[in-house]
Length: 451
Image 1 (cartoon, rainbow, N blue to C red):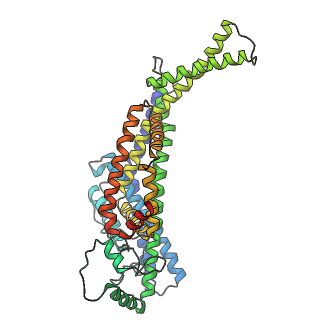
Image 2: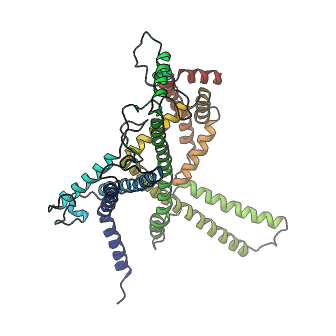
């Protein structure tokens, strides 16, 4: 007997549910296997220690080969560990037995029989211990993990305010006065000017025999963190967009179409403005047809022919507004799923968020005063300037059409009359409270350019 559609759907969703339930187990096992590969490389080629070219005197090419292999496994382990945490939170599993681990498993570390809970903890400890050995303090994000497997940084490689050894990435030296302004002016005054002390400090670093190695290490970590920040920004943009489009096409869209195509009567116009627009379009279609008849573009039509033409136009308008209403409902649910995906990324990627924030601070602080003033004027004129009400009006109308909401002119005008004013006040307070302390020269340049 052929199974019913309900039974087929039950099997499909049952298999999908089983795959989702085993996601934490699968992710943890893949992370554990990646760490085991790193351990195998260390035992075979580096005497069980963290990779170091001085252990066996490997050449630069050989060492770079091992470093790339371990970098790949570290990235895989971190991604799978993040997948493990996310799926565990999503499923809200209360017992480790739900991960699918065998209660009689054996740890590769001690060979002793472990329970499922102890086996999970043992694997997590082993993964965390390996990740900790390839972890250093990044030069511009204290407490964040390293992105490449390099040995621990020596104490002389102290993090600077911009993530550089004595200057920025272009080789320019950092100004001690500028550093103090960025740190809120917490340094104590001394009898010797800080610029002279900074000069002697730069000379000391330049004459240090290990200065070149420190600069290379700092550059490697800085480059890796820049790549991570760029990838994380792409993830923050691409994942919500993909979630929106895929859920709308394969999950939300079919569900909404199914319920709106039910035999019972469905409301086509989800608000009165859509109904009024439909009436106006039908009226314009009739006037357009009469104009063509009066201008002899069409032969005169009888009353029945005119009615038939108008029924065709009405059916076209009907189907068009039915599609608009369905799209508005689909957009609401698809946008909710996209927001959930975006929030999940932020919650599960706190280290990446810290690195991205530090990277953005570095980029902003690296701009010249005129560039900072230009960006401030551009954004203020765009959002709170003289021409901003027109942009806000277009934006609000687009949002209302996107969600199928009535385009209330009173609400739009009230929003334009209040929100830009509040935004302008907050922005001026930020300039006075924070930017004036961090970069007074940029504020002075901004005032001169704004006048």
